Length: 189
Image (cartoon, rainbow, N blue to C red; front, side):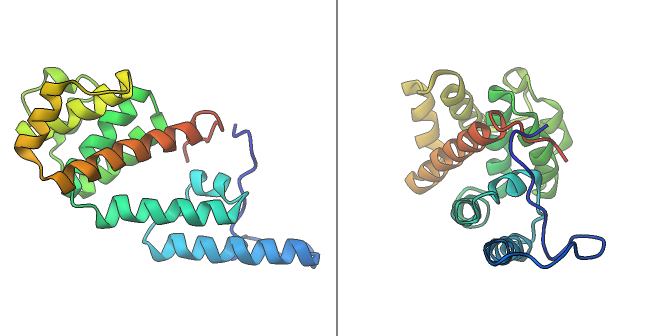
């Protein structure tokens, strides 16, 4: 059970209204409704992670800005991004990210043989050189906080500098997500 309340969506609450909100409740409700509308406008569901972060709507709005970049504007191909997220999620032991990003990886066209390789992806031959370099990077950051020189050389041989920055941002972003999901005990939907 989450350590903070899940903030309901004021525009999608079933049942009759429970009364007229006070002024501060009305303003908070309006802000939450607006930020949830932003989530839906991105084509996303209002997940439990967003519902916990909505305890501070401005923080959720800021969170969505970076999330939008990572998922929609990054130079990483979507399939490589999702594989990297999965490597991070498995290395950190974050079931919430594993479940959500297995689905996202399928939508991005990742082959089932690659998904079936997790969590022991290192022993699989399903990954090409760029994927293996990115997965190794994600795993080393998650387990050591650093990457070996040969890992970075493998990345530089396969990805552009911009893609490497986006890879680093993606891995870092999902470490942040883990630092929210795990200590706040956010439940899987």
